[in-house]
Image (cartoon, rainbow, N blue to C red):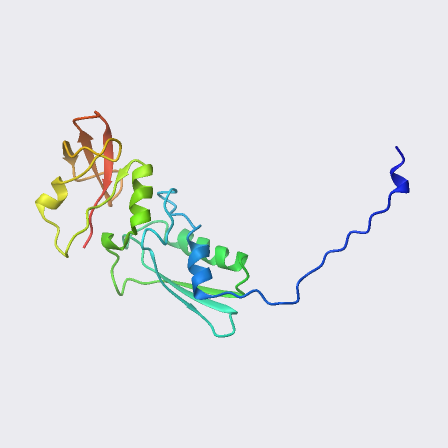
Length: 181
């Protein structure tokens, strides 16, 4: 077949209309930025992204984040991930600031985030009212079978934010994301 007989004129058309970037679209974009330690949950659902401000001309975004622990080794990586995602959707200038002015607490995890923690095999932290009690720590549900017939083996897990548990029903060992006030 002689392809020389076929001529195709491909033209790339670009829209002259400006894409509308809003604070809501920034939140939605950041829902795709996953926590580097728990890649089944976004930083938004984890409650790490605590604020977004968009400039009136839509050229600059300011993002505030509060990691789960002040000693988190992934802070710089998370800042870069947030920055890169917003640049990717068309924001010209992005400033990401980590702050501990208002400490992170486990009640900031969204309901969707709690479901993603379970999918990852982690028991989500129980909701609290500003106080962590022994009863709160012992009333844990197994992320695999939903049983509350669970024993805490140690409050010290592989990271500062997790404890180790064992389910007496399904015989699974699992980690629980600790409640934090």
